[in-house]
Length: 460
Image (cartoon, rainbow, N blue to C red; front, side, top):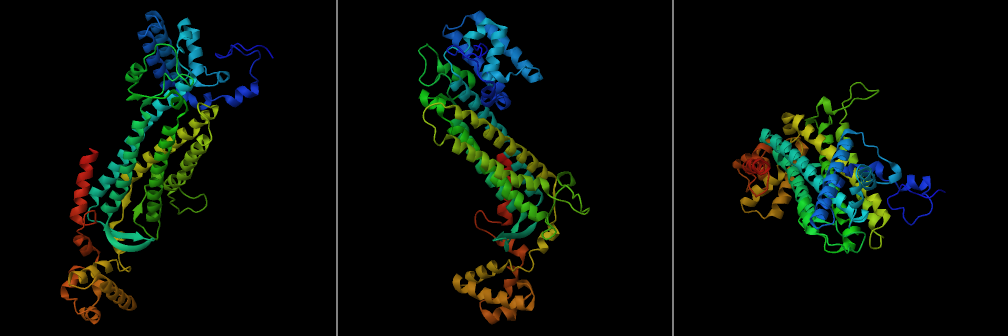
């Protein structure tokens, strides 16, 4: 083999890297999406090097011009990425050196180990903001639908069985609450992401008089990593972001499952727009909720990305190991899947239509007002456990006669309890039940309307 000369780290090597190895170790195919972050980090690093006297003003100006030209090429899609240079860091540095001799000084007091940690943190920080914005957009869509459907009543389910009547707005706000916790997790993760690793060098720091705090200031980091070994080997922030993304996709998956059921003929609660449905290659009548099904299915993919990252780091010794090159495909993929799922979910929520008549009709036949009847008895002095048994027997009697509780004659009620009087009919039926919910956080009309108003203000 000929002596290598095209690698920026080739100094002590006598032979060229085997072509098979070059292909195997290359990450430029996926880490090129860090180009903008890499250039931003290099610009801040170069400015700091100038301020501490390790670059001249002319060298800094040349580096800035060179990096700006490289970024324009990358944006335009004309940059000549070279797989033999392995990664985005080496590609950009090599291109800069071709433009100016000052490029050879840019890597002063810096290693690819702390450089890639910086790039990934810059990307993750932006991703937190971008995903948060999409979460907010979905929350707004749900709250707007809740505001339009404040009087729509449908069964709430436990064990996928009709349980109690509830307002559609209340159910929609349940999804909003889940997404609110997702936003909180992203904000907490972003705070831990926002720690500068650059300046840690390869593992133990540098003997040169750099100013890490200045770089943190230039890049908007709240603090610098306090331990150089931890700085280059830490991927907790990526795992934490992956977990946050997995939780978001889990919430989207549960939402999608509900609405897939709601789209079915058996439920008939929701009509997904044609633009978000597909047909069958064989059955001409079909309108399939494929987008919802894919959102549900992508949860498995995002969970796999999180698992990949957990397994990747579980046995790594301190500090940096090349295994960490494999952190980027799963975290990039998780972010891509969640972003696209959130965007489509918001569109479906905004443009879909609910069938209020069907929802109310499905409140019949399941005796969803049975709990309200038991609580009516409690209000008249009956111990709850006794009331529970009484109402159970009343329901059995009504089921035998194929009538609703609200249709039962007073004498049937009084056969089981003399505490029941004619005023009981003001408590029965789904519309009466939702009027009477009063506990904080319940599906009462006034309470839900207040929550819709609160969320609108919060999301504005």
